[in-house]
Length: 325
Image (cartoon, rainbow, N blue to C red; front, side, top):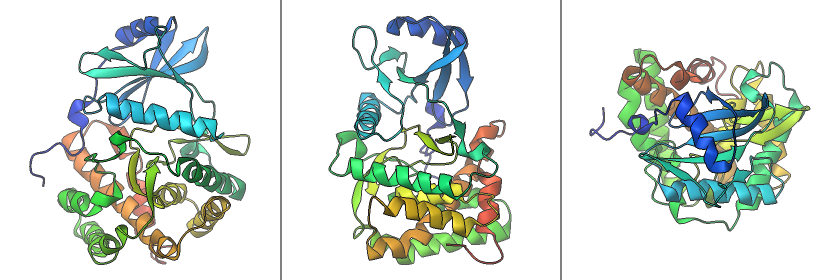
């Protein structure tokens, strides 16, 4: 399957308890109650002050050092300054950006109200256009932004490593038909995407605008959260990721993708090559998601969150009427 490296990085996930998490709040001069939120690689604690949600305490994976946290905080400040809805970063009372907890770094951000897009039954075209709008504004705001930690990350979710990731995990997919489907995407990566990647515009991107990281309120996208997968890669892949997850279990996924792209195009014009590879990038993200999920299921069979998008992603990949984009 792999050469022994922990491509999932789940072995570095923190295991801080609730009492310890609550005690860490003293570094920010706060006292409150904490409740753990679901997360893949990190730990996130919702902090309530006087019974109201106010902050999120983030405890990073051991693989993420100061550079990774600095990248995330710099991104959030950059986007916040451009009025892109994302959480504010709160330094400690002494002005430090984080505190060390054993092998992990803990930091604090503001809480954003809103419902995850995944739980919104019928968002409507306006919400999907709003999603594209937020992703497009993010692309514009991050044009020219750079950070050392955005380069050289060995991140399995980076589309640049799609060939390696799919090849490493396809064997964990159960069922010949599904394995063949992932292998077909892998062949398209080798034949079409890999030769095109270098010619695509590149920039630092959020890289994970999935339907659990997008918050909806008041009929629009009101929050973009979780910057832990941010990386310097093909710019258009942020749009592909947003389309892929917005389309999940929607009755007309093609119209969803059209709305997301329309919102994005208000702010950033796609090149001809980006338009050409966008449908493939969506398929690659979905195939990457189900392949990683299959591998993680074997490694961590009791963690349901690691498979949160698996079933709807398969349904979209397996549509009999072809891929609707």
